[in-house]
Image (cartoon, rainbow, N blue to C red; front, side):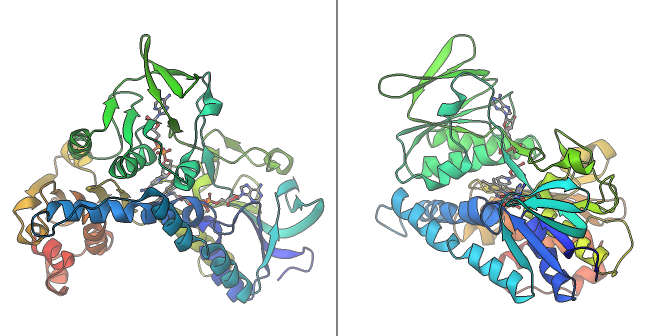
Length: 443
Ligand SMILES: Cc1cc2nc3c(=O)[nH]c(=O)nc-3n(C[C@H](O)[C@H](O)[C@H](O)COP(=O)(O)OP(=O)(O)OC[C@H]3O[C@@H](n4cnc5c(N)ncnc54)[C@H](O)[C@@H]3O)c2cc1C
Ligand SMILES: NC(=O)c1ccc[n+]([C@@H]2O[C@H](COP(=O)([O-])OP(=O)(O)OC[C@H]3O[C@@H](n4cnc5c(N)ncnc54)[C@H](O)[C@@H]3O)[C@@H](O)[C@H]2O)c1
């Protein structure tokens, strides 16, 4: 405990990059404060994962009903307004729940915008707060296209808060947000057009699976414009016109700019503290330490190759807790971080990708899951899995396209992360029948 400063550790930002580690750190007796300019919990609970997965639930359910049509009878429609209200009911209590956890271990929560004035001092609400160690955990914000009419576009948070669904929606960008929100808006009845930057969507995911998801969405009425080169958004008397390509245009009611997210490195006083950063985020070493000895960074704001996901932020903040509490001195050693895009079907993956496996000459097994009895229970047709095994026959990577994909990857993740051999895998018996049993059965 430091007498020289107000706090032992001060975090700027209250997302997963902070609270997953700050809470157990404070529980060890460390004096901790968190500065947050917006909602406690940050992006994931309030305008990211939790909000999005609630909006997706009726989409997932309606796909299942569609497959079981004839057995289940009657029309089902998604009521957009009710769905958004339900989402709000689910997430409304999360900031209070998270701040309650923080306060229960003695963390001081300071509402306001934090800005360094020197390496040990952050100014918030015109007051100086000092700390021995400071963690920059300020996350990302939506990128906005630098084109005429960019102010007429909306971001992912606006999308999830829309009280009614526009008839026509144009989505610029085909990454996670573009593809997930195209799925949700289409299922709820909007006419959706997705403008691709080049000719690929979800570039980091297995492209044959991505193309199957695109083909399915096309069958459902979504239009994909490849190499779109969107150049302007114009307002006309009744709606908007998106100009793209060589003199092409499309009329629409609503435009989502889903062209990525950029780090919150401005207006944090990083220059005053002498912290190095660039357009990709804050530069850190293998201890998540910046070039300034007492300043660290955690979560999305770090410039790194790790996926900008909640599991990454959670792991990093937990690592900093262990470092600050003296539990470790080692460099951070990232586990296999899985990822999933919540289209319907989902595409989820962990470990060595199919593309890397092929380049390294590793074996790749392709399984048509529509032939698996468990996937036939709810008539899943669009379901395929690719498993990568190393030269010793150990599972080192898996990617799956199916409506169960996130649960399959979660079930098999320990095998990849812990490098289990066949004897060890044989000791794991899953509940039956279950997706875990189905996935283990294919190993
Ligand atoms: C629409 C959407 C859907 C997503 N879905 C998923 C998903 O399904 N699965 C998944 O794993 N990830 C998902 N993500 C990503 C996930 O939300 C992030 O990886 C995660 O929230 C990162 O946590 P963080 O703490 O680094 O940043 P954030 O949660 O963004 O927290 C940063 C906080 O810092 C605050 N802040 C910034 N500057 C200052 C300042 N100067 N002073 C005080 N406070 C400041 C901000 O207000 C913010 O609350 C999604 C993201 C979005 C946008
Ligand atoms: N399921 C999940 O885990 C999940 C879901 C949503 C968001 N996220 C997180 O949020 C981050 C942001 O998501 P995102 O979808 O905004 O970013 P992204 O980086 O996944 O995708 C951005 C897309 O915009 C495209 N693009 C860029 N400039 C363009 C232009 N001028 N015209 C057309 N397209 C253009 C890119 O080619 C890319 O397809 C993700 O990186 C991820 O970390 C995760």
